[in-house]
Length: 410
Image 1 (cartoon, one colour):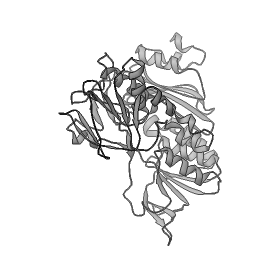
Image 2 (cartoon, helix red, strand yellow):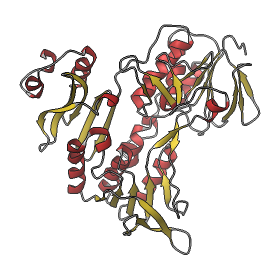
Image 3 (cartoon, helix red, strand yellow):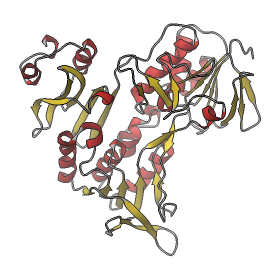
Image 4 (cartoon, rainbow, N blue to C red):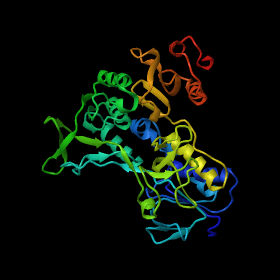
């Protein structure tokens, strides 16, 4: 394999697969190697806590590219042999199975792993973390029949989505979180309460703010309860821990790359080492608009980052300047969000529509400019929201809140 031509991608998730596809779409005809360790063809993660967990979506629907695509496009896909070391000097990647690859350009798309809880009982049977397709399949098999007592630790997006799905499948659900309003760290108290109220209506129980202090099991080592830091004992047949993720940076660190809350890269996704790039959950990217380093764990970032990384690897001018985007589905609440989360802390909230009716658009306004927008049960407005953000033009608050005014006219 010619090290001046070989494109090696470590991480067979969405960012890595998108990069491989983009290399071919851009006309690159040399060797492309995609290395994974999960034993799976690249798949989408967002449905794992929603439609796939509910049993409404098939395994095939998770695939951004069918398995035969990799063969047909001459991408060497290795799904069960982890990369264990990188030598930037010799441009070499070594695998656990003994193979090694020389690269012309290397992309690290190693993703993230669940943050683990260090509390008594965290390893008893019936306690699980949630990240992979296998995790979702196992949890579906446990919840599909209903009647289980599920305790969720973590009140972020994943915890709330699993709570909604589990409740719709007929299970008892109790959710613990450090915030007194779920999701408030991401979208603020007022909007967090919209989701909280809908969950309460559906029978989800909350213990907020509250943390798990201990997980108890029976004589056979099977989980029976979660004890909170307030001393309450919550009966449990199953426990799912969803308290965030950590970027997988071990390879980058051992290779001497700059790592700060992920692999630090510029807007073209170049690392501190020549010919090495990073994308997806693991990359801490200098955004050209905010001029801040940002690490995004959402699927849209994986797609955008995979495309930018591939073009940068080919020597093209490319920058990850997309406006971050994500979505959620919880019961009958559908939401899309676009914006610069780093800028919303000091922004004012302007609402178009009614929080009570759960049909509204929320805007974050900083110096009279829209820096983020979230639509809940209002559709076909994301393009207009992103245009407002991208334009950086000042807007009138009353007009922004007026449902009769077209967003494009502001």
